[in-house]
Length: 93
Length: 116
Image (cartoon, rainbow over all chains, first blue to last red; front, top):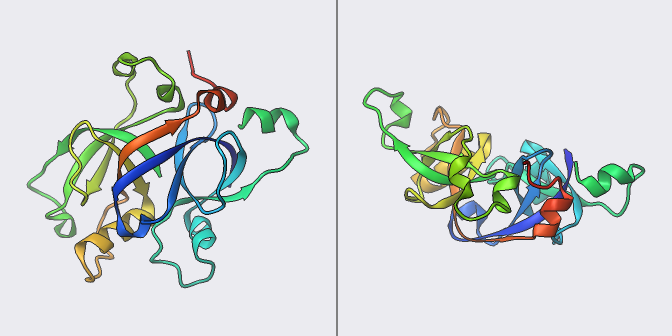
């Protein structure tokens, strides 16, 4: 998982069936890196969140062992309220 | 997943049987600094290109969302029908064609800001 900041939203009408109805957010992933994640927690732009990868991301959308068919490789799994590490929380890296 | 712009396509005559019939695109990933760059400045930046399979019929110049790994193969299976293609040697696929990006400049700067 990484702690990161939501910097924007992605709008798309033509998408894979598995992404229909899903909200996609742009998150800064450290340095100059940029990642697109599925958001089911309704994160706000500017908010610090945790993003999970791979099967961890599928568990956010559908918990359990039977989620191999879920189309997701990155998902917002937590909205951060605070941290012991204020400098990093503000910097989002 | 990541977001990028389609810059070209790849074609080949010799390929693994399970990859036959798939359209392959080259995508230039966007970086954080590209979101706040002045119009026209993006051409000066050159990033590593990613080759990905495309079943949504994206074209050169489109902005697309690309999924990696197992999620990419799930997207291909959804589009190509029920038949299992477990041996498809694909690890990146276009999963959405972007209509619009809403980017908050202040959040980008807070998150690390543009790299000079």
